[in-house]
Image 1 (cartoon, rainbow, N blue to C red):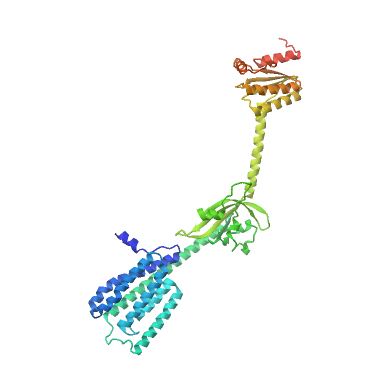
Image 2 (tube, helix red, strand yellow):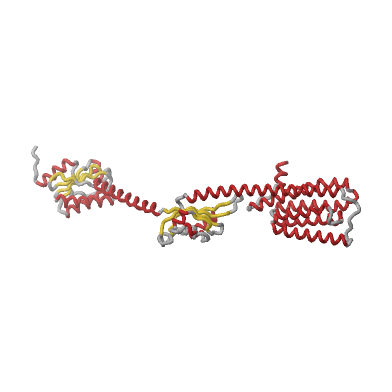
Length: 466
């Protein structure tokens, strides 16, 4: 029950901190006056029965009006509620002086001071001046009405009800002044805290190596650190970036190729997600370009309202150049490794004058077949070979594709004037060749490398002595 009541009596919260503070003050005053109205009504019934009807005709509508103003404040109409409240309060004080005291010299004239104070707290100095002028004009009008006997001061002295109302006015004014003093003290504490945080931020920003910039929500630069000015080749002392468009610090990423999908602009990203980060080409004052990585984001207050934009910009030119150099060196290493593997996969072994051996290990595809042919032709030229032994013992599968590749290699070697001997023909390989219908009738095929070497020597007329 208490939680429900506290929620119903709590003031509204606005995005602007000052509006929230004023709403809390107005809510407090309305609740105090409503409570005072409820408390005073039975007392006036008991002690001032002569003016009971007149008292109730003012107090009860005033209570209803206060309830209406509380509801109006709940819906966020803070300024309208303040104006209506001041007008109602001013009117009640004036009617009280006119009907009950019958003189501007009544004790409740001090209520006008309360109206002026409340106007200053709720609506500012201009409202205080307006209600101050109205109070002076009203007191003058009451005085004129008194001396012209339009209103006549009652012969009685000051009644208890007058002192009661005056006491309530003094209590309300005291509470308002106390609230105002507390509000001012809290504002000073927040100001000192904000000043300390601003000093800490400035110290961090000025010692940062990245460029740091801030702007208003509409995109006008308000701050840039020294590293940021140096990043763009500008003089930090002149502060030439102040007031320029924030978007000029974070241009949209460039499209590198025709037909590439357009990337979202930083402004769109900020609008939808509250942040943007990415790489873009930037330009210094002297016209030189550099690569930058920008991180841009919105800064919001506790109510979620955007109060500023910020950007952190880093020069990544050297980093990107180092990355390009690293990739180039990596590509060179990969190419060297590929070339080494290529040479290892197609080795040429000169066993003696005019005889070379090429052992093949692993599968043979189209790309490797071309390498085999080129390596074999180069070996024939380099070693002036007349006989080439191609050993396929290490080839796991011999199919029509492998046979075709070997036929092309044999034909190329024949054009260079070399005879080709294929060794490593196992029983399984021989059976596979027959099943596939591969014709190697014009090619010397042997079961193992030793037999192939003996055949090569016989072709050259070399006899081994055993």
